[in-house]
Amino acid sequence: QSALTQPPSASGSPGQSVTISCTGTSSDVGGYYYVSWYQQHPGKAPKLIIYEVTKRPSGVPDRFSGSKSGNTASLTVSGLQAEDEADYYCSSYAGSNNLIFGGGTKLTVL
Amino acid sequence: EVQLLDSGGGLVQPGGSLRLSCAASGFTFNNYAMSWVRQAPGKGLEWVSRISSSGGSTYYADFVKGRFTISRDNSQNTLYLQMNSLRAEDTAVYYCAKGVAGGWLQFDYWGQGTLVTVSS
Image (cartoon, rainbow over all chains, first blue to last red; front, side):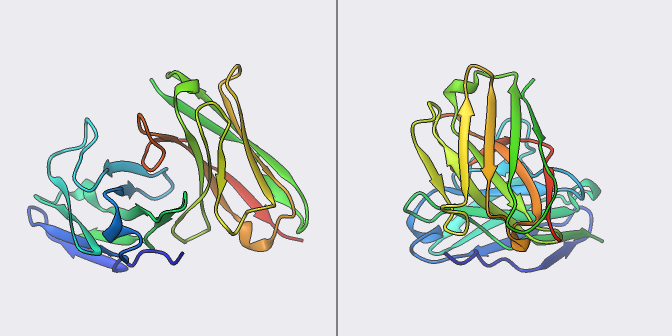
């Protein structure tokens, strides 16, 4: 399976909203509701921020939201804050007991 | 508090072997599926392998099938990854990750990672 496609970079000013896309196929993103998003700060382990397309784990601010349309999932970060600057990865079930990730998006808070 | 402590990484020559461990605490280990996820230097995340809560079912990414073996000792709350026939492209930080309740496709807790370097 190929990796999911994410833009290499995204940016926004504090207080603004930014959306990161994650494009797959009907065999992964489009076929299942098992899309997750992870935030990773430099030198740290990833942190789950969205699972099953739209759900937020407890403790994750509601500034983070997820959605999906067809073969593309999206993560929206509203009210950008300096601490949101990080790498973001999407993942999706791809069938046949396989899980794939996106290439990652570096979010810069200007 | 849930904690996952990865260990066992290091420098190994191509063709060599290494066994990674992940010591779990703060949750009922034998109730959860566990996975290994890796990240090559400066690259993205890759799912490597998963094991069911009982240890009875195991699955692997194609690029490690036949070379890596995942296992767990529920009496010791420990997850393992036996890596054989290592290649340069296996160089990465390896994370153990806990599946969210009832599944394995999302990981709500991660270890700190252990670096595996395959080089002569």
